[in-house]
Image 1 (cartoon, helix red, strand yellow):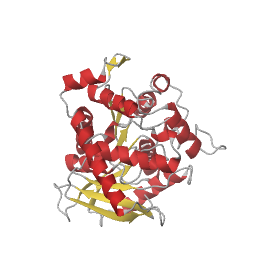
Image 2 (tube, rainbow, N blue to C red):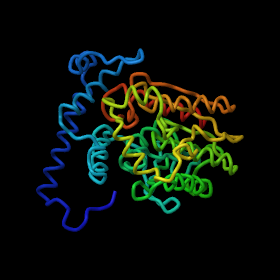
Image 3 (cartoon, rainbow, N blue to C red):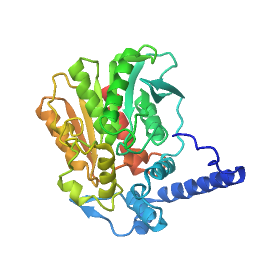
Length: 359
């Protein structure tokens, strides 16, 4: 994120107070999320059951804490303030995860961060995941998704290269898509200096980042670029969002209709067709040689049905696909890896799928 303008930095005493407040908030949140599940259930209230699925107690409690705290939702704030709020939320849920090494660099003109797990030596050649963050094409950056990148790298034993692509509304479609494809081309060209095995390259992302990762995989197949695996975490695959899950879960489960409207209005130009395949990969012609995919969804996510429809679309086209639904989760659980138990366990399963896909 950009540095504050001159005169906007907090004074030293205020900055110190903000740091203390942040640490206290983190400790309280982690403590509540670490309570025994029966206690969490009592605090969360009656179980939420939809479509035969029961929302995880810790997730229900987290949503309840957000409501009673009066903290405004990201999408209700002006976009610059919303970006700051999303980063704050991500840090609260992400915690502090250790990893062997991180290194900031530039990839195809974009800021990027390379994560090396403890299982790989500094100069050891191994698999690499290009990770594209979510946030509705409007929010998110290298720091908002730092924690899940650390966990994916360490658990899967792969290097993770996260890229900070251009965001809307400053840079509407197709800027983000162009950036993601350019980043992967750069990875292929610079695999040696990244100590990446060209035969074990993957692309992945969550939500909007899952959309961009799917587009990268399609482009790689069409251009004959080496791609071994795609990791799609609750991806947006249909910009129209005309599904049962989009209607059933668009309020009260973190990803709201208002957030999706802000994302669409900011990213998709008025003269663009939402059905265009880069906006809606569900409508894409599936090329030969498309990389195998692991696609996961969350049971209480508005994007659930379109993600699962894309998995079926790939499977019908002959692509090797593993589809997994985490029925007790909400959109955004990939970022909840530093507190609680259940969401982190789901992300560990995703990391295991990545390890297997690049074995």
